[in-house]
Length: 100
Image 1 (tube, rainbow, N blue to C red):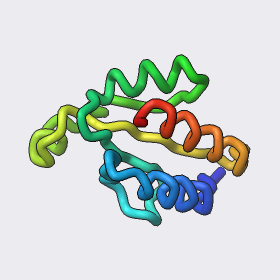
Image 2: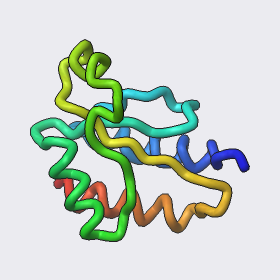
Image 3: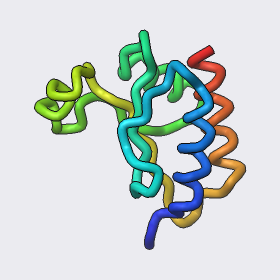
Image 4: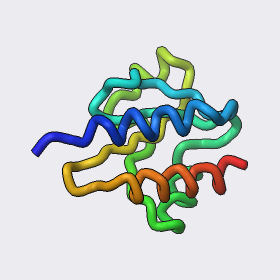
């Protein structure tokens, strides 16, 4: 099964609207990776999980890349063939709630 790349692009475009979010991946990547200015990725992950969003946070076995980019870690979200636009909208809504 391939990821739904249209949903990744949709979420990318939604995150791009928030000035506190720095997207680290390209718009056409298979996963969406970002950091939030002023927030540790582990804190973001806890808040996202409390709001029903499952994602990966931390250095994801790439601490040298995080160090080179000057970040403590990152947030990574992926989608599967079963995810829908409704899932993407919920993700964007939760991110907005956390980041505001």
